[in-house]
Amino acid sequence: MATAGGLGVLQGCSVRLATAYLARLGQGLVAGGSGQRMGSASWRRCWASSSAGSGPRRSYGSEAKGEEELKVRYLEEESKGIVVLGINRSYAKNALSKNLIKMLSKAVDALKSDKKVRTIIVRSEVPGIFCAGADLKERTQMNLNEVSSFVSKSRAVINEIANLPVPTIAAIDGIALGGGLELALACDIRVAASSAKMGLVETKLAIIPGAGGTQRLPRVIGMALAKEMIFSARVLDGQEAKSIGLISHVLEQNETGDAAYRKALALAREFLPQGPVAMRVAKLAINQGMEVDLITGLAIEEACYAQTIPTKDRLEGLLAFKEKRPPRYKGE
Image (cartoon, rainbow, N blue to C red; front, top):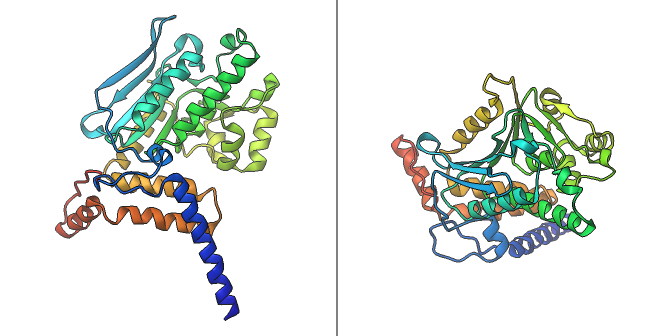
């Protein structure tokens, strides 16, 4: 009896901890279409309820080079709901510059508040390159304060990508080094061509990964392997990355150099038929649950599941099953 009582106290404490944790995020979340307000800015980051439009493409350019450094494409027809972020700094191997970070921030800010977005793919528009990391030529022109500011802004943008409420996929068809791999690590899923090269190589420059690499890499492949990669500045190809769990899928590169992107697109299309509310809440439950103990995680799952119960989509799913037809979800 005493043991049972003790367990009850433990579970009660865990549930209270989870409830308090969710309250900080804003447990006022109610599935889209309920008409109730969200509880906090944090939940607004995880759950966007207003639309930012769905034009075919938005491009952000560099005045210095006259090139569109970031191409944002809203796919249509059977891929409607998929948005592709294409990095396009060919003259600099897609290196992360101050301007590109600014453009990524602007694009992500629009996407996180667009309810029509269902999945986001991050890719390169430059053959053979995903992202070579920070723009070192630009870096040499910065003073100490500017370097610190740039790293902070880069970290913030990559965190925003990690916090996007919908599934994100990194399509790595070429080199992803330093900040480029950190960008990929912020995505939910990574796919790569076998010829791709990936590594956190900052220790070669007497610095460390500064945009989340020291935290996300060990969470993906384990602490010992992450330390080995960072300490050695080792660069892996696609097959090696797949063998340690850094990526989910590896493909032989095709003639057009976009094998990883094609796989990412196929995965994104696989996600499209599922309930939008469920997808967002599932991502939130997984992400937050992995940061706490199991009992607290289960309480987070319970709270997230509760958000799906009053939705119109849940009823539509049951009706579609009964009528033996594909469901028509609206994200409500």
